[in-house]
Amino acid sequence: MLDAASADIKAENKSLIYMQPSIYQQKVIDWMSDEQDLSDKVVNSVAGSGKSTLLKLVADAIAQSNQDLIEQSLVLVFNRKNKDALVAKLNPRWKNSISTVHSAGYKMLRRYLGVQRLEVNEHKYRTLAKNLNWFNGTKPNEAKVVSLSNFLKLADFVRQTLSDTSYDALLWLVNHYALDIQTKYLIEIGEQLQYLFRMGSDWASEAVIDHTDMLWLPIHWQINRSPGFKHFQRVMVDEAQDMSKLQLEFVLSLTTIQGKMLFVGDPAQSINGFCGADTDSFANIKQRLKAEELILPICYRCPQTHIELINQLYPEIPIKPRDHAPQGRIEVIEESDLWDRNQESSIKTGDLIVARCTSSLVELNLKLITRGISCNLVGTSLKQDLLERLEEISSQAGFVYPDFPLFCQKYLEFKRSIYEQNDHGMMLMMKLQDLIKAIKAIYAHFQQCQSIEELQYCIEQLFGSENNEAVLLSTVHRAKGMEAKRVYIAEPYLLPLYWDNQKAWQLEQENNLLYVALSRSTCNLYLIGDAPWFTNHSSKDSQVKESSSDLSKKVDIKELIDNASNEQLDLYLSLINREKGRRIAVQFRGSIEVNNSIS
Image 1: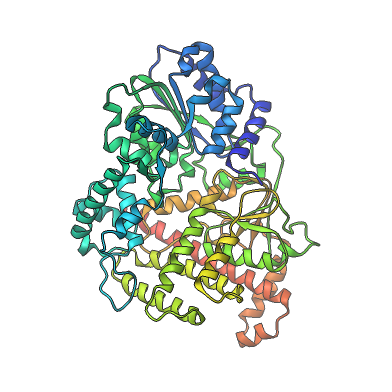
Image 2: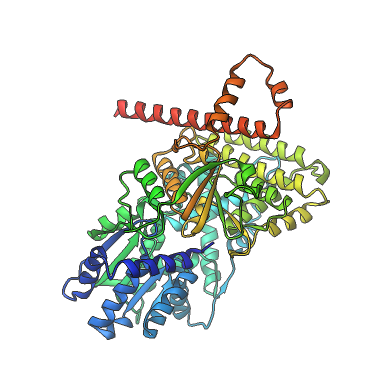
């Protein structure tokens, strides 16, 4: 299994074999080499197209045209691993010109404040908010303005979107991100946010910041207008499709009208709108800079069959396979095939399992552990979500650990009463039920736990590093940038995921998630269960059809299940999953037809 940096290096190595450079890359190189052309460019780079190859070739072009431009250039990449990988590929003079976006902000703040180092405290605003003495927890019998966790989410969205704290601005954020906040309190909440940000700014003056501060404070303090600020002549940015308004404003502050900017990304892989990214980031960058759009359409990762399926589902995505790409395979399997060593699809170390929902991953992870298969859940944010919900459940009045399932249900009922007043209540409830289902599965698995603290420890132990010594399980969100020879999609009928009152941008991102899931494998893609978007079913179809006729007879369903063999139960489950997917697809197509008729 490869992480984001290793995957991109592998794609880069393939691209160097097949392209020296491609006609698509040459257009970008020619533009960057022309010192008279000060226009900006955006590059639509499909999944597996070797974006680091492009950045390397463009950097080489800069060095060849003018060595002095290296010190006046800045390459902003996705994460530290991508940075280290690119540094290793380039001339050593580029070492100080390659950075993550947040690292660039950190350095800017350090120079501005005149300190050697800054203390990065991710609990900074939580600590400050608690000092407000304004939160009353999640107890059902208490009046509630807003929970601490939702207050902090709103505070972060204000910074990520560069919003103000007026009633209208906060109302838009609450509605757009479907936050669990009662809007009648927004004026009061806005006043508290203003105070929070003042305290946060004061504490930053003492060199204490959090992750978002690295970009928000340079904009808030207008550091780019300070005497001696260094502007760059060439700025190149990776993963442009998932930039927040804050990130874009920060990057734009780094150069002047005499500079050139290159933004590389895949708009069809925009999936982080839920956490503050601008869902139209790629298009907005193009429009704001009046930039020409170029394209990298060749995928060096995926086999032909995977790309053919993507082309069928999303013909608007300009992705095509490389010359001589392997055929590859997509196969529907049963969950039991994962640990059946007689099956070619049985799970092995280095394989990657992705899923749309948390509970799907957690339950499958526990089943693998039970069978002695080494596996790790990956994703810091997922772990944090589970731990935060666990804390809220245990904070209820009268909580005792032996009655944990009962308090989970009480918590759900309480949240349902709150969500009923929210226009996005169904989506919020769906997400919450998914997390609670995962937590209850963990509770049931670790029966030796006697306290919340012990259960918290067990949750933390389920998460591990990304390496080839274990099977990795990841949400599709977290899997973007990852790849593996063999990839499994758990409960594929949940991709895309639909719900009532779903916004257009949410539906678009759900479709993008399916594209991400389908473009992770370099060889075989296994669907654990049926999906309405894949009709080339496995050889077990005939057996499923027989089971379908069994279920259609007037029989007692419970009796049928009680008397079924394990193999028959697997087949019944496959049939049920297929029917779920079919109904979701029918509902979706119906809503599209209605919308089209209205428009």
